Image 1 (spheres, rainbow, N blue to C red):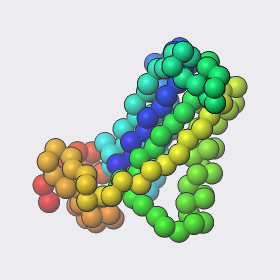
Image 2 (cartoon, helix red, strand yellow):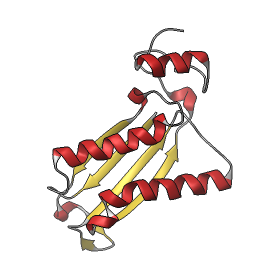
Image 3 (cartoon, rainbow, N blue to C red):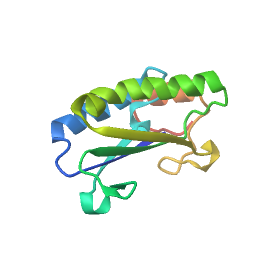
Length: 140
């Protein structure tokens, strides 16, 4: 699953803007065959008195932590391209709005992940395709 934590100042995003960002994030992953329900986006409002960039309180910074669990890569070119594509995806929601944005991606071991007590099926398997089509986990 990709799990996104979006830390931002209060009032940075309206409910509609949050929904659009979550939809853009989900669309990125479903292009590669991941089920929609794998993608989780959490928005965390953080007041400037608790959000520092360096030693300065920030009123216009967005910090994003992405956890990739369903897919990993060790290929440097693909890792670099993933970062570039995600920066492009985020720009309309951050940089283009005058917000400072920083993100990083962690890769969590896939074997430490379960959904409703079920270990997700192997990547690109028939069971994973079924999960994507049905948009829910089912025993396989």
